[in-house]
View 1 (cartoon, rainbow, N blue to C red):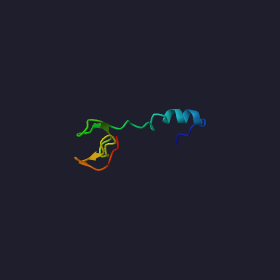
View 2 (tube, rainbow, N blue to C red):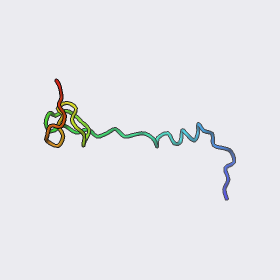
View 3 (spheres, rainbow, N blue to C red):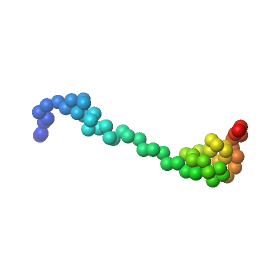
View 4 (tube, rainbow, N blue to C red):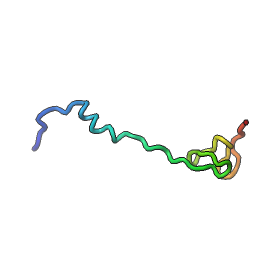
Amino acid sequence: MAVPKRKTSKARRDTRRNNVWKLATPGLVKCPKCGELKLPHQVCKACGSYNGREVLKVSE
């Protein structure tokens, strides 16, 4: 059975793994009511609407 000759250092190990943990940017969609960019399946912070109806009262 193959055995490593030397111990892999933490720096070398972490350098190899550093691209695994990058998070993808969330996809933004336009609000159908006001056109503001928002996260999908979330209440629009600009107008307070969700699924075509007003959910939050937004003071302007």
